[in-house]
Length: 349
Image 1 (cartoon, rainbow, N blue to C red):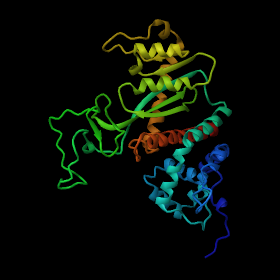
Image 2: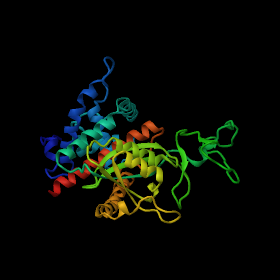
Image 3: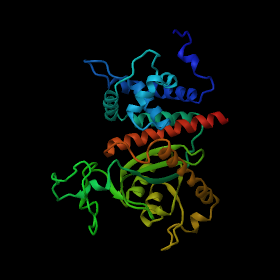
Image 4: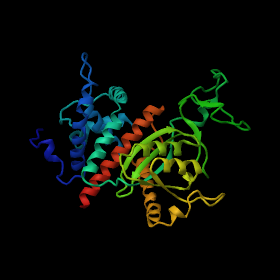
């Protein structure tokens, strides 16, 4: 009936979460002043932001679909309790209380600060390149169905036989983001990748460095035909270096405007040449160099980041609504990917 083995001793010394917890603790120390502002001066004590972030990190790392399932795991999973900082007999939070406290973190830009703190640890280990980068974007499916995408000037029909799952017929109707909007998530936009069906989605953007494939910048925007290139220019402006950089990208970025804007920002566009329907904007002055070929090989590694974030990190279809909340989780998931990547690189050295 009694156990005299400490929770710390129950976790194997070589468990992969041990080095990750050390990195998380180091990052949270830098965020401590920011967390102090989130505590209320009065009322009942809330969930400590440090424990809240650790729990959210477990949700991403172990692909737990909901906060309710996460709280269930914390009830009986000793590994999860150890990582979060709960004792064996500590009470687990009510799921709705956990969700409300999670939403408070949106006000403090905590995801961006946590991402920066994790990335700084990669910089300290000499894992980042300061000259060679890759950019790309992907669609993040919104938490909204096609049935919710209705005309803006049409009043909602409350007389439907099943309001929770209304009967909708889109046959012969031309739908666009100018005339239609989702009643479930108005900030989601109808978009599609070439060769795929359209869907309500957001656009997630990543900027990775080419040495080890770590994410150096993450951004989420509304999905439209110009979001990828505009976001890429915004992210390279945040690169802190005095030297000229190279920027690898797929042929979707091979446009005159994007190439010119990159050069204005002291970046050499190592963009894949698009020769299918028109002449490319990348001439021999760029493509003849060996560095261009290296960038073309390295740029494919950014797909590994998107793949992990979608399959493991729950970003294939978001569980949140609105650009702020979806963007917060996108940046936080990018930080989780960097934690895993830094741990693996450190173990290999």
